[in-house]
Length: 347
Image (cartoon, rainbow, N blue to C red; front, side, top):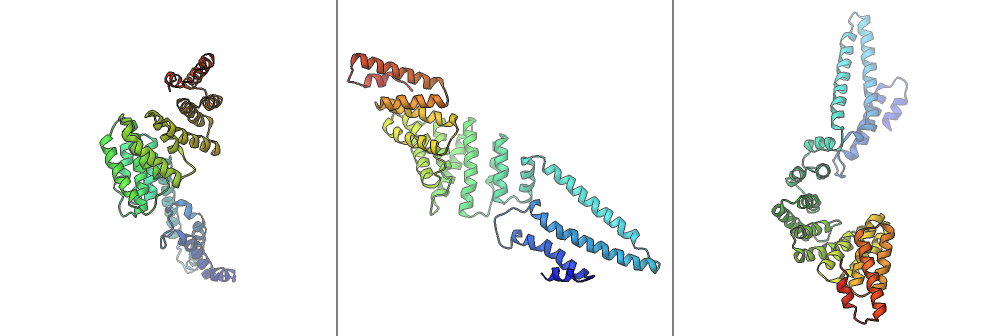
């Protein structure tokens, strides 16, 4: 306000200097990390301060011109020095723009540059690791985040979540089982030491479950699928995919009655969340199989038919055909024993 008042006074260069400094310093203060607000310093924070910078440069140029005019009248021409200085300044700024443009080539080059500048920033590490994941560079992604130091408990869990995703992808690629076991055990220990569960921590238990699953250890995987579903329902109701997963794994170990409850919640969540048809259809198909195995044939038929209206698969068509054949056979023979039909119907 003082700068604005002085700037409004006639021929007040001091006021313009104060106003320029206010434009530079004021907008940068919230992001200066004097008080931590969790943002990452970058060009986007310099748009408003650049107004003050331009104002200060203008005042500086005006003062040089004024001094130059006085020197010229006295026989000393300072423009021969001033103009080259500004040419050099513009050349340095242009070089910086060209250099930074290379960093902005794509997301990975940008996060790589920023991460190298500040390697202990959790947000930068997570962003860069995620880009490396997408590029399939799993080992590099792991090394980006494994050595971050000086983190609080909840930040360590955030880093662990990234590690768990990298680990899951490595497992899916058929390697690093021992490394995966070590990382996930360390991360789960971090999570369970916290006073309350964190959103998305179900990913850790899910990754551990898939570690066993990919090795064919289905029964060892079940408790971790169950834990992932429990945590997801408590902390992240927008994503109940772990509930769907545990319903499927119950089917794999012939715990069909338990599978029904989880798959019903999975289907209900998919409809509430308006999941895409291709993702809702498998849940309905699995629910249809669970209904068949528990003798609820009318519900099984309805679920399978609905799954086929969303997305047709050979397995769902086969299951529905076998169900219809069994029901026709039972109607003809008036059979009272559904076990034979359940044995005939294969998932």
